[in-house]
Length: 303
Image 1 (tube, rainbow, N blue to C red):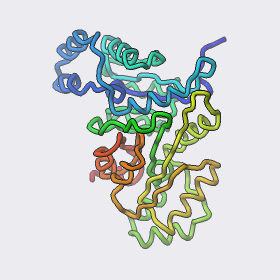
Image 2 (image 1 turned 60 degrees about the vertical axis):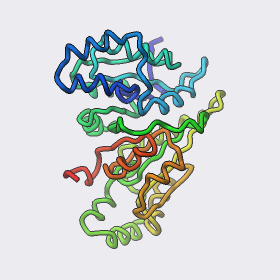
Image 3 (image 1 turned 180 degrees about the horizontal axis):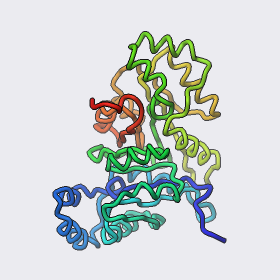
């Protein structure tokens, strides 16, 4: 029988999102490719420190058991194959021996391999690759490598927080806000409260997480999700109605009405937070692992 990733939640992740390769990356960005490769060769047997998305990956893989492989993590990297050896050795050293698949393109575009993988999520520190992945229709975020590490307080829960507009939902309402202001936005959402918002780029990931949770696990792992949005009442209603129309429930919903999200995220303790607003992501990264979703009208011009 052919090997397939069908019916699995597939996460594609770059080496810098999974491990802390920032020192090595500084050499690479200086254009000193030979020195970069040599440094990776010299450190083949030195496990890299866990990166920003390590906790998310480790917990998702904990949903697997010998009889049920529900999650697949594939390294998708611009690194060279030698550096790929260090990635796999680091994964094994940190207790992730099931990270066994990878594509290393030595500087070429890696995002084109998302299609044969059928990825539900792509995490990378490379903003260009993330934008291309989103353009192709895959949930993707640029990992802020300066983010703090995830809390270790909830070892049996994968905690993921999502912004709403332009992330889980389309940017339809955000376009009204940007063009006409808050009052027009509130009226627009009141008028359309019973009309579900169109899907956003991360709806497929939320749906895949929902399926994973519904499948259950003998390992005692659970998923806890949160909607963390600048919306407030009465605009909250359309967001909830949209989730109801998907038959997907989130565990927590925070309608913050423009309050800074960082402190609330610190209390929720997610393994990762996704937002389209660079200001929100930068604030969140002071408290939790965070990634920028280059989607929607807010990302059409520099801010």
